[in-house]
Image (cartoon, rainbow, N blue to C red; front, side):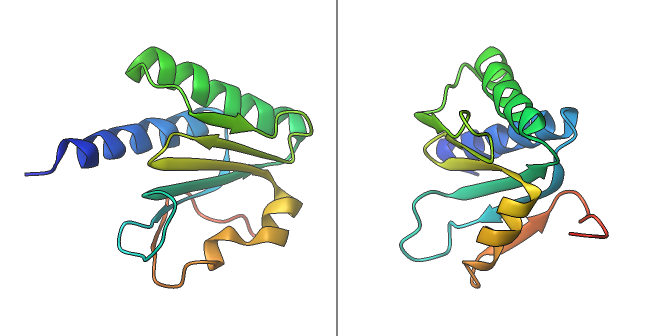
Length: 127
């Protein structure tokens, strides 16, 4: 039987991923950091979009939908000003919404070689 925190994280993660899909987020990945040393959270969910408008829209949609469905709000949200990289911190899950070039530059998926990476949506041909 799963602990409540694990169930809550799983439910929150699925809801966030669904919100990203609804706003056409690209190359969605879920990185499980629970078995890594010194991780800042349990999961990173990463996606990107083609414009600052879409980056903002994905972030706002996640915040509004998660608040309505699960009554959760992020402890911290940043990046809406330039919308090159929006970060939503739900404590045990951190969501990163990038513009494509910024995501390519930072390569967050490559930082944890020992983490389990789940590919939610297939990468674009030119990514």
